[in-house]
Length: 266
Image (cartoon, rainbow, N blue to C red; front, side, top):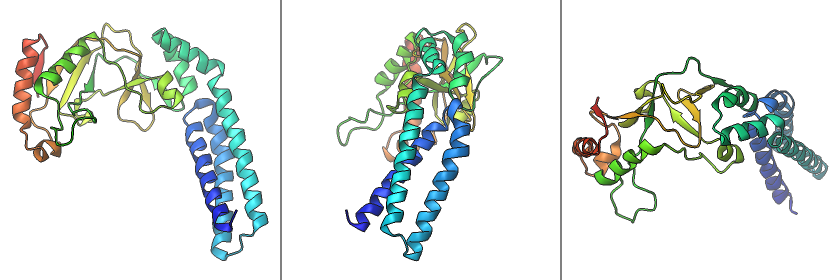
């Protein structure tokens, strides 16, 4: 391997290790250890490499030592994350999620995810953003938004439950899918929302650090709702598409009401 290729391999290994760090700090059992052990060593190792590169003194022995340490650290933290996935708190939390046992989730999830706390008392009403963007597989040149009929059908289907879409294919996103909700409608920055009445749901709501929204960990949330339609939309896509949001809003309101959905324009 040429020196240039070796440096590229080191950079790739550093990025892979950094990703392991980013994952580790998501979890309560690993965060403190990752911050106190892994992060300082990554910073120190990266500092040495940058210093030697600037000085033109990065010789093969230094490259080999760095590569060996990166390999050791990567194996150690990959193993730690593997152990976490099979640990008692995670296994119990997955079981509770699958059983929709929100009392158990209230106790277990803060043991799994760092900086997560259950919200008490439970808010009576939370808001959920409804996207009316057309599917990405729409044909080229097609309209960027759902039709009024399709949007109404999508909203009406929420009466049978709202199902979260995992943010990624990472195992924790798949095992613990969550809805993003807000106490204040304005927080969602979306013109079309559902005001969910949670008083009879018995669901647990969580607050993650540094997030303005709340999380509901559930495979399907069934709750009465009111369709809230903003009087105006700040989304530039409406203007770019040459469509009137006001016209869409009024047509959606009329069609939703005819489907038995309570509607408010705010």
